[in-house]
Image 1 (cartoon, one colour):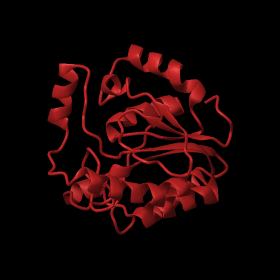
Image 2: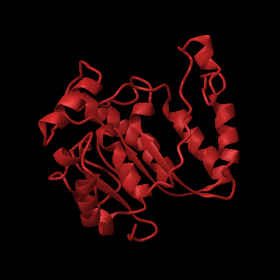
Image 3: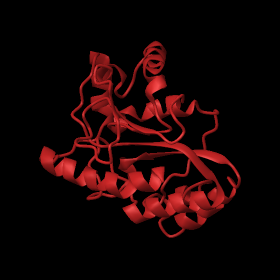
Amino acid sequence: MNAPANSAAHLDLDAAWHEIPHGLPTIDVTKWGPRLRFSTSPRAIEQFYREIAPQLGKFVLYGSGDFHHLTGLWLRCAGTLVVHPWADDRPPRARKRRGAILRENWREQFEKFAGSLTGSNIYVTIDLDCLAPDFAWTNWENGRFDFEDVRWGLAILRQHARIVAGDMCGAYSVPSFARRKQRFASEIDHPKFNFPSADTIRAINHRAFEALWPALTQ
């Protein structure tokens, strides 16, 4: 990222965030939203990145979790992926799977993971769908965390490593797609929810922003 070392930006792809506080500068890229949502082509990704890269800060707030694949641009991943799936509601065999975590032991395992990063510069991405119901409205299924869980995790990471950049996404937005195949695949993959009013969604997600954005960017 070419922006000043202490900068942050709101990348507006889909109007998922409204009335962003704290003077966070907004980059209007809503024209790109339908093309990039849920799935897109490598060519479109690279065109988009060339256009917005000079404006990005080291911390990026952007829209629905339907755009979470864009984290690969902010991060330019190293090709390493380790998965720790929740296994509380899974059969006994799945609960013993390598990397599986339970509500009763996830903090212990997270501390071990953080310890393996000691002295590293790290990038942290937060998707609001990690939060339990009532803590965020997203386009995807909810997770199991509350605000305190996420803030605790960030604090543990900072005890061992340096968070040099990061992003947050996941606020609900009304889906809009550029291609029929894109819409079809999205409708198959997404859960079906009865959403509350737009004002209720914005209020709940604003609370999530206030709880987590300062903890990520401090």
